[in-house]
Amino acid sequence: MAATQAVEEMRTRVVLGEFGVRNVHTTDFPGNYSGYDDAWDQDRFEKNFRVDIVHMDENTLEFDMVGIDAAIANAFRRILLAEVPTMAVEKVLVYNNTSIVQDEILAHRLGLIPILADPRLFEYRNQGEEEGTEIDTLQFRLQVRCTRNPNAAKDSSDPNELYVNHKVYTRHMTWVPLGNQADVFPEGTIRPVHDDILIAQLRPGQEIDLVMHCVKGIGENPVSLPLGGVKSDCSSPWHRRITEFLTGKDHAKFSPVATASYRLLPDITLLEPVEGEAAEELSRCFSPGVIEVQEVQGKKLARVANARLDTFSREIFRNEKLKKAVRLARVRDHYIFSVESTGVLPPDVLVSEAIKILMGKCQRFLDELDAVQMD
Image (cartoon, rainbow, N blue to C red; front, side, top):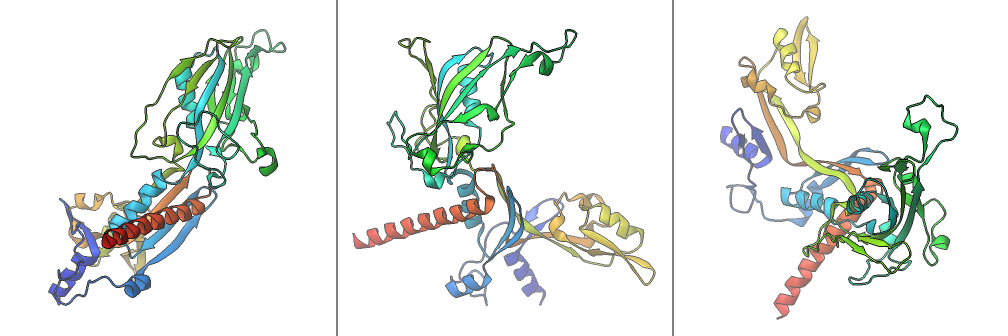
């Protein structure tokens, strides 16, 4: 019986000890354990696999994915981070920039501003094309000039009173429709996600005048392109400087999430009753809400209330009296995903798009296998 329990623990739990972590490797492959049928079975997978939505709001989503292997969970996380496309600033045409922010730095800051535009409604721009069209490009104009406030008090030292337009925000970015975009997208639907992102600060006489081109891209590409730089075009009256934000499709600006992570479901087991003051001491060794102290027949008794809330600081192992009374583990095939969108798309849409991409990868792999068998 003890041997069976040990094997079951090895198969289903990752155990955190005082000086190390046990059972970290996947071992449930066919023939590894006597008496266990670990051969792949689709019906069994469909029965055990499930996705539970725990919390969802405008920009965040927490859900449980149960019954999968770590490799699949990590592939899903990486797709969320780097392979769901978004729209981001790719080129910045600088007509005038007399601020203290250099053109390259300004272009980089603009590239990292999340743009509220559904990338599914746009096409990828073909590599090598200089001019964009309404189906693959969004255009924004940023034109701000700082002046003195004639109505400011003479003894004032507050820049907010002394100057007008001394802070350049994303609210100053104006969408310039290309082609029939004004008919396709209602006014106000194409804009930066947040209107209060500070881009630069100006002083009287300083000005920023530029045009931005946004394209569809992903955060990862096996082909790495140079970051580019500044090109001068002295043929224009203003000696137009063109800052090309060349990143291809391998830049963090295309990532649709602020964070996408997962952790295994905590499993905390009390190996012996913990009573009295020891129960209070035990509760302080864990995150709030994990251990609950109850009154049972006039005695304080500790019990595990909600192991999910624990961060596994392993503070319990510093307590010589209590460290042998608790087993810390994680459920091997229960993944708690946390997805925080940048606001470009709702988090549930990001998850569904990531699933479609993963399905597409699997289908391409199957097609390759079929092609090899035919050869």
